Image 1 (cartoon, rainbow, N blue to C red):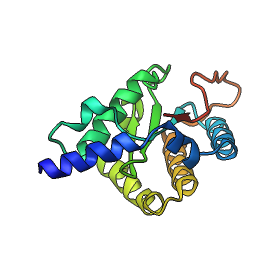
Image 2: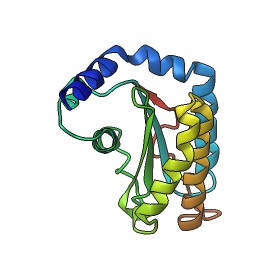
Image 3: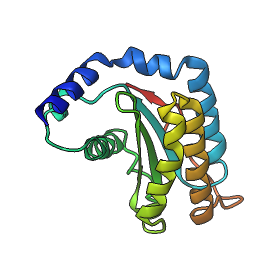
Length: 174
């Protein structure tokens, strides 16, 4: 158990922001930004994408599974990026942790009350294959498409109603 935590510690120590920038180069970041903007024209939700190279060191010594650590970090990033601070409580964070090739999706309470946890779990499982193979754009695009479909189903855009862009569309790279 201790050996696993030490290995995880060094893996996350080795991964830094340059890994995130290599995984999501500027051209890909622009394409993802455009896809988020296009998605948000179809619903009233707000979507953020965050690609983080590794976990902050203070989290790595916790005796938790990778899934639990990824989930806890995604919740913290959801808060830091103020994804929860939207008019209709329908913001969604798509979070990718490169050191573990793990993905997490955090939905604000407006959308979460409509979508069962099993649906989110299945969505994450479908994207996992592309991400484990290093096909980050494919996995993130798939996640964005599936999240968009849920937002369109529960929070469709109302024609003629103003639709402010409450959160930046560009992915966050850390």
